[in-house]
Length: 233
Image (cartoon, rainbow, N blue to C red; front, top):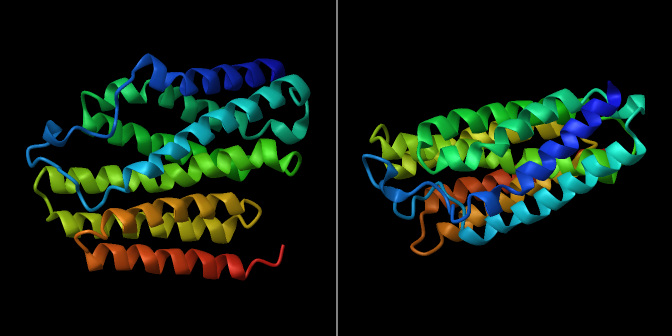
């Protein structure tokens, strides 16, 4: 049974990584997918930041592949696999759904995030660079991406002004990130990945300057770094 879990997680990681090839051309929710078109919304990080998906895909495939080939029966690798399989399984079909329904895609990405965070908490202590680190950057990016989806919905459906929606999304992301990083010091790449997203938010809001959004993102960066500075492990 352990080998089946290991194989299932690896296959899910491969299928997840193949998503951009199977469903190409997705560059975020289409502006006109919302009643209020979202052209250059302040909640969305600068486009270059999404290149991190390449690293995430490769690292997840490498980590789950190592787990299948070398750690299929190891007890240290067992606990996180069911939750990771759930997250990746939803991720396999997320891209085609996101191209037609931002609402459904937002609900799905929150399940992906919840399962990914649970998997990260359940990782063992062995093979940090192949067991913990791939999940850390995957979870870190989802911690930014899921609230961004919420911010887009809030502004896109006219429930809040764009800047206010972005601030709400940032508060949600930072709350999750700070709680997670405080509880899981052994995964520093989690916080670093969130910082990567926050820097991209600052870049996206630098010209013209949106001081509220960029300022809150900067405060978030300092807060995560300060929390990491208390780490004695």
